[in-house]
Amino acid sequence: MYARLGLVADAQRLFAGATPGRGDVVTWNTMVSVLVQSGMFDEAVQTLYDMVALGVRPDGVTFASALPACSRLELLDIGREMHAYVIKDDELAANSFVASALVDMYATHEQVGKARQVFDMVPDSGKQLGMWNAMICGYAQAGMDEEALRLFARMEAEAGFVPCETTMASVLPACARSEAFAGKEAVHGYVVKRGMAGNRFVQNALMDMYARLGKTDVARRIFAMVDLPDVVSWNTLITGCVVQGHVADAFQLAREMQQLEEGGVVPNAITLMTLLPVCAILAAPARGKEIHGYSVRHALDTDVAVGSALVDMYAKCGCLALSRAVFDRLPRRNTITWNALWGEMVARGYTPDTSCVLHDMDDGDKAAVLRCHSEKLAIAFGLLRAAPGATIRVAKNLRVCNDCHEAAKFMSKMVGREIVLRDVRRFHHFRNGQCSCGDYW
Image 1 (cartoon, rainbow, N blue to C red):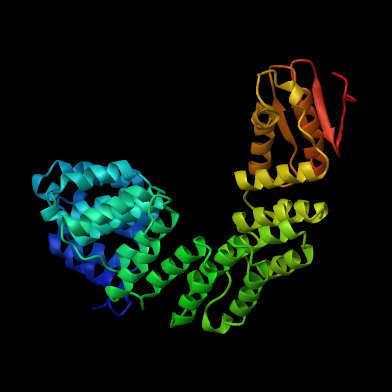
Image 2 (cartoon, one colour):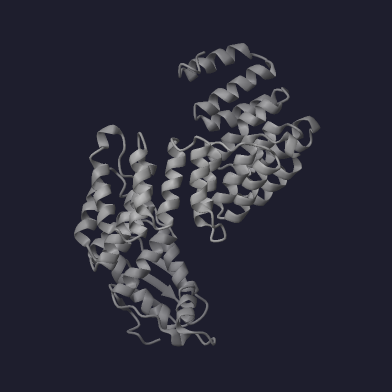
């Protein structure tokens, strides 16, 4: 009762009073379930550990409730511990609800091979619809679209399950991406026949499918039929317009989306990441600055993905000072940020010196090899991890190649930091695009 009223703390106090010693498994299961449903996943996992420590034997309900917490927390190692416990108990191993939770956990962590092993150990007669959905969704999210579609066909033809909205929300994107699947639009008819056409998740998936097929007009018609479009609905249509080159329509949709802020639908990080590359392609920094302003007002500018897109957009638009300013403000950086910074180097005039690569390959492949030289990777790691403004120090036991030396000069100027690179011959101090060696070493 307390849990249903949102009074989780009161439920926990009542639970503590009910289990001063050990308590029974039903009471523990109830508490684990309450914590998971309330989004308190850490507490749910800890409650399971406490339960085992006190000698209360978990049952199928316990694991069916606790395993989703591992999925949400991305705690695959703990999930594997639970799996190891399960397979030692024949009764637990045969529990279809536990197996379904295991499939979902492994699929969520992109361990589709392991998910399929668990899936295949359960006979079709014992599989629940949720297990089929989890496995199909896992394949679709991993990009294994043909596998997802084959399993979907088997689910209906051999196992006799009728797909639900959750099934179709995974199947439709797989249909859209699969080059081998020709009956994409027939699936829309199937959805209508099954009475699922009014479900928002299915409608979003249909919009995505038609946008990928280049039929944004059909995607728009479906969008108009959605009762309460959510941010996914808007982003799906905006992305479809961008992919098909309808840039003006994409920006108009974003403006319309902004006007709905009071209704709780606001452009999010994905919206901005979709529009910023368009600004870069069109060399439209004014629009990019509008998006940047929006990201600052809504505290999205510190998102590493949005920040990387801003760095890349400003660099490609020739606004190198702004690109560097955004880069310096990012609290975290990743490989996408590094790639954006590399693009800025090219914009500033850096050209890979492919003569440093002696392998017999074309210049494009040589340039790719140069990007993986240890000096560049070490400097990139330093830029990603070191405090803003800190000196980057790299040591190398061989002579630095001409290309890495030139790249370090560019990077020192772009990020406004000193880079100290020691090779087998000397120390190189790079500051503001110059090296202490005077380009002689």
